[in-house]
Amino acid sequence: MITGIYFSGTGNSRYAAETFCKELNTKNVCSIEDKNATDLIRKSKTIIFAYPVQYSAVPKIVQDYITDNKELWKNKYVFVIATMALFSGDGAGCLGRLLKKYGARIIGGLHLKMPDSICDEKVLKRSMEKNREIIKQAEIKIKKSARRFKDHNPTKDGLGTLDMLAGLFGQRLYFGNNAKKNSDRLSINADKCIGCGKCEKLCPMKNIKLLEGKAVPSDKCTQCYRCVNTCPKQAITLFGKEVIEQGTIEKYL
Image (cartoon, rainbow, N blue to C red):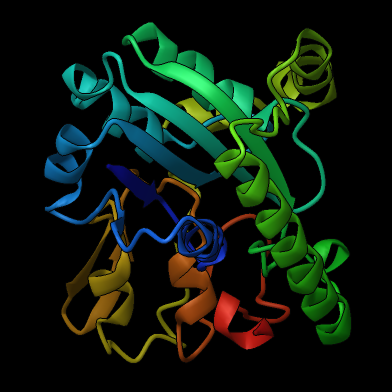
């Protein structure tokens, strides 16, 4: 049995996992946040694991899920899909090495350029047309990779030694520590916040609470940008000081 699992802040990795698994004719696809995920993994021989790379490293929430469920991975065959805005070097390899530590067998990898979820930094924003073209190209790449997977010749993006060096010296050596721990940088503008509670419900880390009708962050942010991209009043920022343009995967399909 093949199961697709993913962690996704704004939908990129979810889209990748669902599209890949659709090509494999499997409907077993769910988020690691889903209470059924561990049971599906336990019952499956092969896992398609999609996640968003941060600084050529694995986000804290994904690291924790793997280590907290370390008994699940022994002798599992895992194909890693790494989604990214520009470059990761060895995104698939980062997750693969962590999974191998707990007995998984990494059978392939796929790197996908996707729309950037960091919506509070102007320099990283692309036009609507560009993001839609990125999605089209990603879909083509996913389908080609899935066909190779079915032919027992899986793609190996990000799994080589040169890939590892590119990820290490390109980003991880300088910024990798940002993904190893939860962040306390999330900021919520109390004047803009209307206390709708959407961010509190969506946060995968339970990092946001409503206090006296206002959303208040803690120090457990995994930097997925889900809340920043979905706040109806654009009251939340993480790296920048103001939201430039919000976007989730549905906007570009």
